[in-house]
Image (cartoon, rainbow, N blue to C red; front, side, top):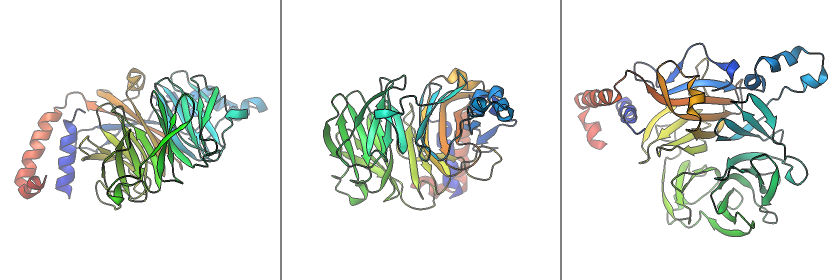
Length: 380
């Protein structure tokens, strides 16, 4: 097995492939660990509004002014996350709120449209659409609730359908609600809110039908990836509902899942899967081959603690770059929600270290593996 893992790492090295100012770590934490060339760095974490707003918010803890004390904003049990540049949206299932965090502006507020017809009950997952609007899957309201770029309530999708939306995606024309109660993806017309169709139950292979699905991602390539807890796999569909296959299964081996949750794709067609049981994130290439994993427990910082949602972005890399180790050039930023622990949002950077010939390392690794176990290479 170690030979196979080394091959995955080697393949990843050549694949095409800040954070809150008060939270910079003293020593860089990289994945994989040395002597393998680094590919992912833990940049920082967010636990509450102090980590975003800085020292002024910290002083409010010791202030006798009651209004200032109320400025401290904390998470109870966060789950979903989405990003638009350096603006992050994080859903909190217990408090029934959505945090709006702007790292560049050092602000931490609650979604302002969360009242009246826009009142949230149990927001679990969320996404932004191409136009910048926010879409929130609320299992308490049994609806998907939409807000504009300023956070004002726009409309709700799904009234009268008695659904249990656990995740949401959106494109130019449609809103996709992952309905756990029906084991389907309900598709709504974005403009008028009418139900168009249901996806996810037509696969010939029973293992590729949705069952107890928890999370969903609509990739830039127009594919729907669904974390199917019932089978412990990730199911791929196109936007017409055609099943394109699946990968992974229930287990504790490499490329297997114990409790798959958040899923996300990046601009290089790589795919990330959060596993709450293994407490890490597994990273796959476009052929569904495991490349590496990161966030495992046991580190002073950078470990995941009952992880849930994930988001990946390559926007505003210049901002996040200032928190990377010297010489480590970022390609993507990965944001993962923890439901337990000090940091409720872990921020990682995927990149390469200057001065390292990753392709040479890949060639040398393959050669070592050929000499050590040629039969394993034949199986690949």
